[in-house]
Image 1 (tube, helix red, strand yellow):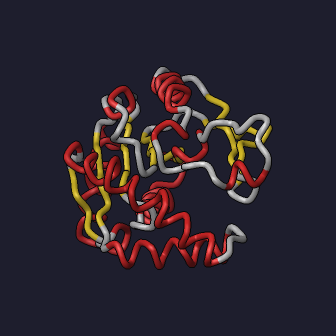
Image 2 (tube, rainbow, N blue to C red):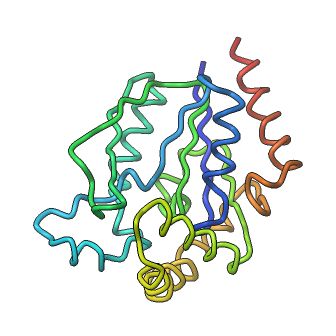
Image 3 (cartoon, rainbow, N blue to C red):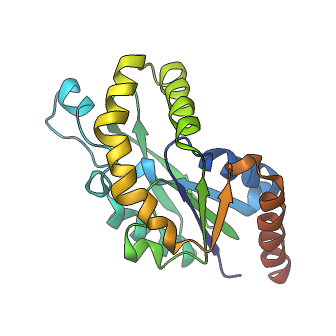
Length: 206
């Protein structure tokens, strides 16, 4: 059966991961998930301080070409070795995770609709839209609690790179979406519609 490729984009803290997790939990082994963040470029030769100052919200921070290549391999029925990124070290690790082809493949990330070659691979493009105040608060809590950041560093990063890159790249990519979902995984009506579309695809291949 042909793989359905779904892209879930939106600003940092918008609820992309929550929506993605709901779908993964519901469909279990029928769905595989890849995060664009796993494809951050390796920061070879840079100190921790230099890596911490990098702009991780710019398209050039990602090895999108490798992601496109991996998605094509998965659609062709081949397994891939997905990179593993460390938010604590601000660098790609030497580890990889093997991902096998699945009936439905979800890719989530802030900039996945910005690159045309990547965008054209998706069968369904979903943009999660959430109020900016909510997004920054969610990001601050996540980065402090889960990634060991200080609140000051989170605020500085938000003002210097996250916010301007959102306005320059993320928000404009909204126009490519097939579906706009307000409040991400908390929008149960939208979630139900997306689940039904995925179920139809899975059923059609049985």
